[in-house]
Image (cartoon, rainbow, N blue to C red; front, side, top):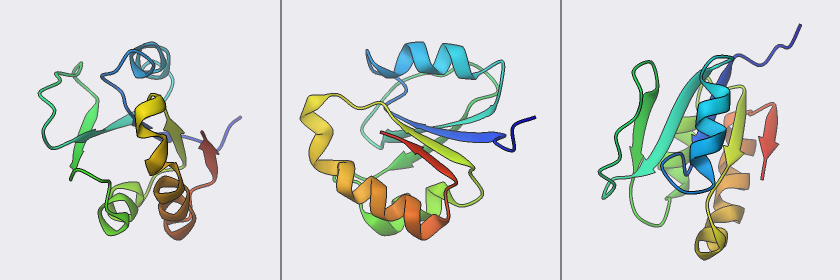
Length: 99
């Protein structure tokens, strides 16, 4: 049995993230991380954490606390945030990072 129970999904409302969200909901406790400017609506049972533009490391680390895995589902335009996400995942003790 997997020790992964809580999964954060970055980019959940986007074209890449929506299929991940649909697949993850029946299997895990899902937390969706979105930009504060987003007006996305999520299914019940999905925890929502809003992050400031630019994905500040301190906010992302806080959002990752208590999570087992993180899935990075942002498009090409957001690849500049990938190193921030990796640093934050390491600081938060994330077991699995799926870029």
